[in-house]
Length: 125
Image (cartoon, rainbow, N blue to C red):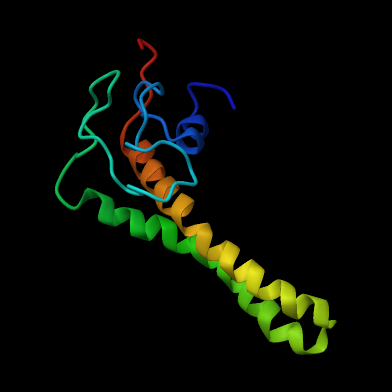
């Protein structure tokens, strides 16, 4: 991934304007405390992350298709487990737990996508 691209900003959870500051107070994809806590402004370029009240409710519409892409194959796998070897019956609960653990990164990535749709990268930083 190259700095200056939207994909870099989304996957690294960086400020979409400068791509240096962190979007979240607790950086990283897999965190278990302060999951959606964001600073009011970027620490580096001072870009406002609280653009308007209720701005991040639109992130629900972004994360919904991502969740469907993950869960529909899992549901189909679950329905077909009756005909498959018993090893997969033990593997299926592990896959379901993994899908629930992926909810945290999906919520964070959805917010990053929403901000990147609104704010463009500026090279002066």
